[in-house]
Length: 534
Image: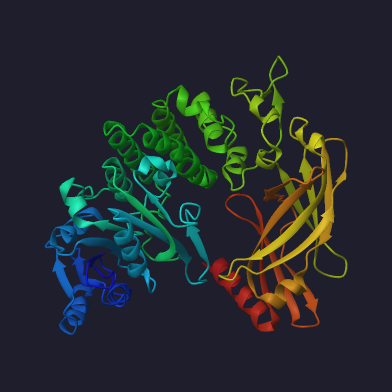
């Protein structure tokens, strides 16, 4: 059958999202004739969302609106309601604050029918609003078309826990009784996706963009994935991960179950550890105790492969210490790419270890880990220049002799804009040995070239180049102290004045905020004043 025949149902769910829900529905209807119906399930909204949907449905015969009589408290019940109501051979899911890009359904349906696939996945992009900056979700999985007879043939699939970037055979889901957890169950995607992979579907993957996930960090009501400040969010996340692992294990999918545990260390654990220093002492204490209990279920095989991979090393430190410890170093290790910052320690036998307090957490594998994978530590210090602007001083630290052995020669300094086009300004500067344990480089911060490209936020990225031609991408740890991260107004022949505001990100990396011209500088100063007054 021609893939453009109406064979797909799109289930759109929402609660109190009148500002966005019609955009989501229109993006589904705009997919063309392949979409037989859009089933919009309103989870007992009180802001007029359902009325907006009813008015839209009055002029669109493909749209059906279902109102739940009481709010379910989560995303699972409305999705299950929509799944029970669809009448098409294929179904996909869409949240009310996101959109389907043009051609998404056609790309998924074409691949599904050609491969006779029961599940077809495509690329999701996270679009930061209002900047519009886009970050692809699990791009390695969707780099090229692929057909898999079973999910276990590509264990990396367990890293893509989204339900919304996939097209499902409706009959497959119903035959295996695959549903979302009902009621208030945060991170229901993790459990639903585990149930899908446990049923061993035939899978097709396409490189096309099929879903745009809108990230609104300044929204009045944060999404579940962004609202991580409370300890209950972490408990819900670990519960969903434990449930997903059990589903895969009970289904005999041992490779996928092992992969799910590895994914927790590499993704969930690192993400929350990066933010842990921002929490209060009681939160950190509860988080640490809960995480230790969760990781206690891991066995020797879970830790054996690449034991100094950042997530595994973080997990071993948590298990080894009864109380929170070394949070700044753990935060740096959780960064992407990872940084293992000094002080470095050795055990009584001279073996590298995490610290003098935790000598049992060995770092011996770092002695043989390939140089491009080492968690190198680079400090970044900004010093004001006499005639305006900054000079950037970089210091690369030794790591148990591995850096000297590799012979660092130069560092490529890249300032990358956070806007969607990701424009960059690069300079390569030589690295010189300083005192036997560090290497240093220095360069001016190119404030005028940055401003010429655009105001906004610029992230610093570094690529250390070694004697044998290898290199390692690293981030720079921002040194803080009196005068080090202070804004400076820099004279500019193009803009008159450029305001450069350095700051340390949540992960400790150095970044710049750049404003141009008198208007831009005035806007920044007014914003600063408003924050001080409040």
